[in-house]
Length: 494
Image (cartoon, rainbow, N blue to C red; front, side, top):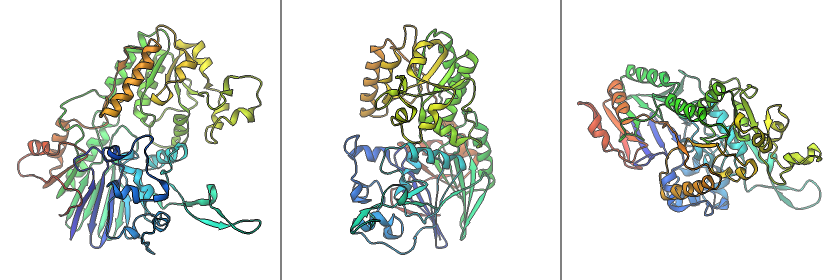
């Protein structure tokens, strides 16, 4: 018997956790964080306690309660919380569509023996997040064994195992475009799609009952929109019995394309004589590419953050389509940290480096590294990315009259985000950067595109996920198809 059980992504945008069972084998499609559920209980200064392991997350429904949790969640957390642990894994794998938090971040809580499958680009993005994150819940590739003691190397007593000593390798497996992974009677076929994050994949899950197609997150209007079109054709050829389809923008008929973003940003930059400041998602390589192309054609340099520089370094040699770190139109912005010594002459290099994390230090010596003083002095030569959390950098850069700010992220989705935007606007007004330019394209297909996608794939049943309005699917599916709006935790036989 083949079945689907939805533990996340139900009547919400994100948090996808979908269990596929067939012939005694069990695999997951994504295992992500639910932003909406997390936001009901937690905030910046109200966070889950590490010492509780999975308990806080189970208590508020962020992780599913399963009858065999001892074979699913990480053993160090379970044991420390007094919960049952098992000798072996109870599940056969997790297939990640991409590296956004709402699809991937909760693999942190899974036992390391359970294989994680993703594209090479997704693996590198998650490696960058793991290294640069300050969160205590970011064990994606390296499993840091927690709550473990060992004898002291000298003298009597015990000490906590920390740092490199605590690291164990997670079973993380890279899958190639078009590859099939066989797990018992299940064959999972990975196909590239276009999304706002590179390395995104959709899956065709071949079960004993027939093919099940999972879109992950996708769009048609990005630079790689042909990948999504090819995914749709391949999915149709499989003659699926079921389609698990994202519906983030199910109520929207149209929106800007990535090319529209590039064109509009280019128009703004042409009319700006001094500094261009932008905020766009640090992992969104296509958006970075849009700003890079504008910088290149306008004779400017795109100044990337240290996190972006580290990400580009990891993506070298992949098909992510990222700009090169040594490109003439790329600079690395070394922001002032800790003592702020990067702009103070006379300090030895090793003392200056102590302002920065180990992964940041190599970029200090890059020939295209720039500081706030370089950008302030030659404002017409730069486009610099500064996000919400770095707005205090404006005090160091001091943008001149005739500068502009481009906000290339989504509009606020909740009250907390609206407060954050209001705070950002206060900074922009203070430095004469208001009104700003809002120029953004979604990473998701529109309602009309979803309608066409479903019609082309032609499944017997459609399961809407990653949407707050699943009922809208009933209005758009062609005749002869059935829409099943999933309920969280309910098993559906296919």
